[in-house]
Image (cartoon, rainbow, N blue to C red; front, top):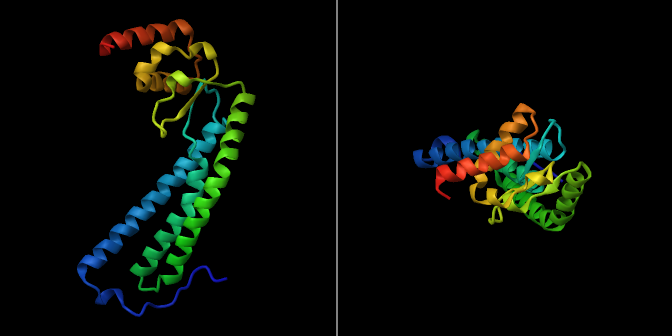
Amino acid sequence: MKFLAWKKADKKLSLTNMKEIASIFFLLIVSGGLCYKIALNFFSEVETIFLVSQPQFFIKEQATILLSFLLLPCLFLTFLSTLQRFLGFDIELTLINAFKSAVVGLIAFLILSIPINLAVEANLKSKGYIYCNWYTGASVRAPDVWLKNDELCLQDGSVIISDIYDWFEMHNEQGTEPTLNELEAFIKKTRMELGR
């Protein structure tokens, strides 16, 4: 099966109007940027979940490993088709394959999302992390929060989640494990400043 066809398009790009050229150029930049962003997100999530950088006392698990992995082929083919059109090649086969990869990706996502999430959770639990529901937002897109020390999962911190994230990230970067007293003092101070 042929995946890409590099044959000259019937309609030359030089014969198209300026609006179409601008839209092709815009789509080229957007699809290329999205490919780059999704690839970065995928590698960042893998690094976080499999604890490549140590020590981490706090983990925000976005649960986007599978989605990023499956979106990338479709977006990459969209980028390629736009590049082909920009260079004056026919894009029909590339667009068909982009659509097929999106359908296959969606089906695979629906089938694999639960097993992948279970594997990620099992990996984090096996490394001694505890799920903290107080720091996990109500939104479906909110990241799951895992802590190395379950004492640091405090209900009082649930109203200042973004500040808690920053505080824990600072400790992760410094490589210093926070204490319960430090966290309680931080929560009290931040809540007073915000009037919550």
